[in-house]
Length: 154
Image (cartoon, rainbow, N blue to C red; front, side, top):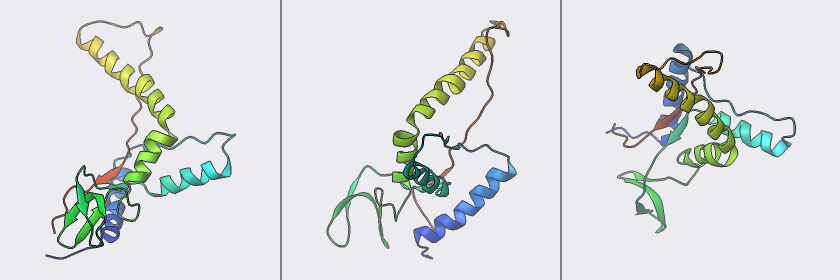
């Protein structure tokens, strides 16, 4: 079984994912920049954007590393992938982008776009016609690309 370090695997996968996104003309969420953002905030947003697509490994289990630490992660014959270690996966950056940095934008997008599109489609499927002068249907899709690496089998 060939062993690839996670960064090499995620780099190869990232290139393919970004190529597929461009080929299918998917729009990727871009964090808004506000005129009152300080340089630290702008730097954090640029650092997070550079990680797209995210390579994420998920786990709710505690595993032991070779040095005896107990961490949340996945144990493989070749080592441990730590969920909260930024050198192993992008979960921390993804969480920071979604929850800490862009929570309000996520709420607004969910309410103003996703919910309104779902509500409009549901009403139409029930045969209820909306007055287009009152209701405006918004067709906007954002794609949060990340590579979910649950099990790497080579």
